[in-house]
Image 1 (cartoon, helix red, strand yellow):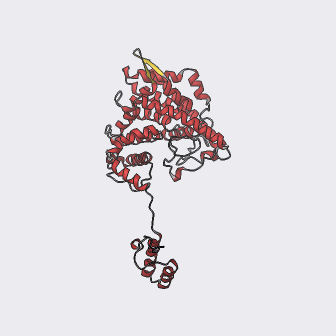
Image 2: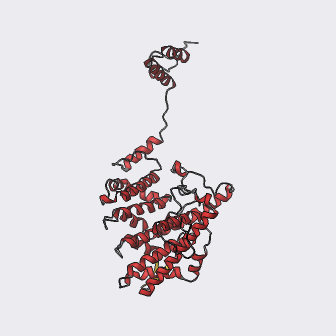
Image 3: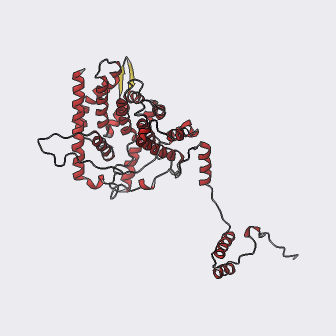
Length: 402
């Protein structure tokens, strides 16, 4: 058990070091492209580091670096450290450790499991590994089990009740589900089956990489990424991922991490909600239809975790906007499916004004402001009647017998 723990720790440190070096290389060669990423502060990992000193592998900076790679590595890109781990069977071994960890006994079980998930999380910044996670299967107790299904079970927290394991498993799912449709872009894109979906103004920027790239090539790349993500989303649904994430939204244990777990679960649902079929499922669930999500947003599970609760509310707000395809400025506490439907009717109702009534309204406003001469000129030029235009008969007058 101790040998397995040390080996997993070595692989985790190996991948973390390569990720920092890769991001440092991107900073030096593609700094303009990295600057297009929204709300990302590129960490300085190697700058000014003496040759005889080791890097300080900070977890927060590591999360940022993985997120950067997730947005910059193309669909068919290869990365030698990850390719070597896959060729040597290390990634397959991580699957095996995750699949059999529940039957172990020993104090190092949780630590081994967390480090194995961390290795998969860092490797899954490469799209090929994301697909490998969704397609690979394990043989556990003479039964074939999907690796993705095992990871989702650890997200639920019932097999091993440890919040660090839950967070590690959720990070792997985030990489698989929340990958962008267009690399080097912060665009909030939706599945291709809907043409009238919501796109935030702040997110609708053209990516730096797309500038100068022919339109047909960009369209082809986006179609390939859409097909890729649809397969990932289908794998999540096939393994009961939506219900597991929904259950995490209601979790209250452990009380110190419940708000953070809710925020991450809602972030993953936002990634899934880019699919039209997932949006249709979420729309009829009590989460939206019965305003249960609004109830969860009212108060944090733990008052000291208001920052995590605020992030959850932000993700929940975006989720409702994606499902309803409408920008919600003032988020009501009693949001229901009936009100969402009324908003939809109002938003798509064309209002037609009577031109004469509109001019009469302007005429009255000018009189109230003391602009009598201007009001009289408007009345004469527009031939406004003394009575409201809506009362003026529009019937044709008889011209008498011929």
